[in-house]
Length: 298
Image (cartoon, rainbow, N blue to C red; front, side, top):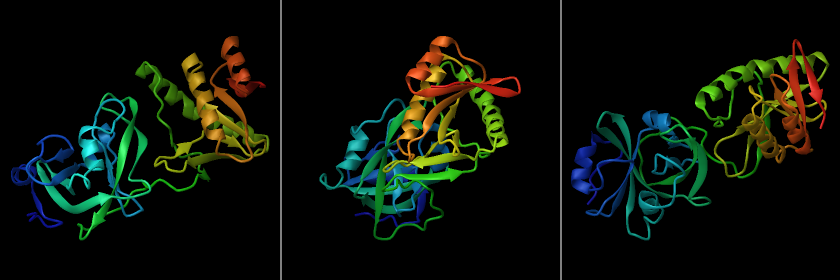
């Protein structure tokens, strides 16, 4: 018999003394009761890539287990996926203090989809693919404090956003000291080129792209709406950075209609081999030259 009411607070050790499951980790599938206990800790979890929370679809989006590398549908994740056919109930708890949890209620997996993949950093701060379960409440649940924009859209969504807002897609460049320095140089480079284009009478925007079925949006650096040019900036002229810029441009271009031409924006002129790489990919190369910019067309 389950005798914990939604909204009731108690120690996690007390819950598991009665209902079983591993005392560690977020997913505790019990061998002594027909339950899968799910423990969420959004404030702490975000530091290691666990972005749990209520979505605008009235489902609780719960990150699967596995702190390093891509998550797989095994062990605790598989127990969540198969809870109905195994005759188990999903019981969701949220942390309110050290060792103390609040019972949110009983849940089941939603449909279309029951779960999806998204990107998040792992315990080593490397980007990996994680499983996000969509948990639908069954019966009474504890009151919802807030909803977060975690719900993947059914269709692609492309919109303009403020260029000055520092939305970034965190891409990994090794070593990390170089990555941080490149990111530090990128923002003023984007701002300077925006002013340069606007000084020529161009309309410059930034695109926020949320692909269908994806929870997290993509953000372009610049879009020259006057000439329909999609621009990706990098704060470094290394081969790794330029390869990354080309890949991002190809990713973004799929969602923008009519299809834009491409340009890679750099802090200085790259070596000839990398200019040729960009040109073969169909991208112009733009670099800062003192107070102005120079360009090698595709």
